[in-house]
Each structure stands twice: as C-alpha cells, then as structure tokens.
Length: 193
Image: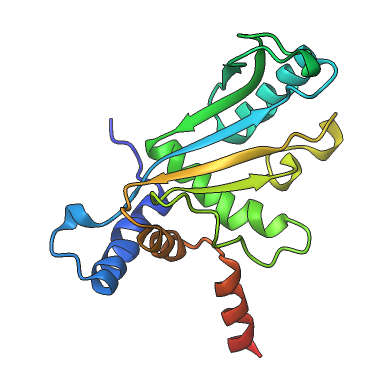
C-alpha cells in the first residue's frame, strides 16, 4: 500500500530545501532546518464550568487537527483560582508527519487569511531556539469549524517546533513555506502598489 505524499511536504522538498540551501550555503542536506512537530495547546482553567468547557475544547481541537487531544493537568494548587493540583484544565495535540504538513497547509493558506484585519503574523514570536508560537483567539478561522455550532470561543497556541539552530534560520524556513510575516506582508503590499 502506497501512501500519497502531501502536497505541502512535496513543496518543502522541491522548493523550500533548495531555496534554504542557496540562501544559507548549507553543505550537507541534513543541516537544512525542517519542521519537527506542531503542538496545539488550549487552556480552559479560568472558565466557571471547567468540565464542560474542557469537553468542548477537546471536541474543537480534534475537529481542527484530526487527532484526539490529550488532557493537560494543573501542576500545583492555587486557591484564588479554585484550582487543585492534577485537575484537568486544558488539552493539547502534537502533530507529526503527514498530519503535521496537512495542518500547516490549512493553517497558513486557509485559516490565517480568515483572521479579521489580518496583516501578517508577528516576526517576534520566536523563542531563541528556532521555535515559533502564535496565539489564536478564536477557533472560527478554521474552515472545518461550523459557525452555528460554536458555543464559546476557544483560544489556543500553535507552536511550530523546528530543527533550526537560530531564529533567523527558522524565520527563513517558515517564510519559504509561506508563513505571512508582517514585514513580508508590508513588502508585498509595497510591490503591488
């Protein structure tokens, strides 16, 4: 049985790898940075009905990612927040391989442009280790989510973990893959005018 290769993964192999090799002068193919995994994380600990909110968040995450989310637990008790240690307060999904490329393609090409007044993502959200995290305040930007069935807005973080050694390498990797950074969006608007 042969598995069809994702179009976005093919794009990475055929266009992104040669462009990065040319730009950064990598001698070995294994030096070229790649996306290792994508982690989508949400927290509902501040909601008044945590159990119901958690079930809704897990349902939305599984719809968006195509994979069943794992519950995240509170690390310590905080009485002011009515939080007990080991209480389920969130959910996360880790995507690798084909699902990761499918999600990235939908995220970059379909979901991000649907954000109201979108002018590109911030180029300052790197963590000095080549990983990029973006916060999404509303799940309705994803085409899979039916607007009629949304009971509450669920915000989440999308972390793209790369093998890049520096933030500059990671930014050029994500730019080549099509991530619309705001400085790039300004340049494209200037070229179009």
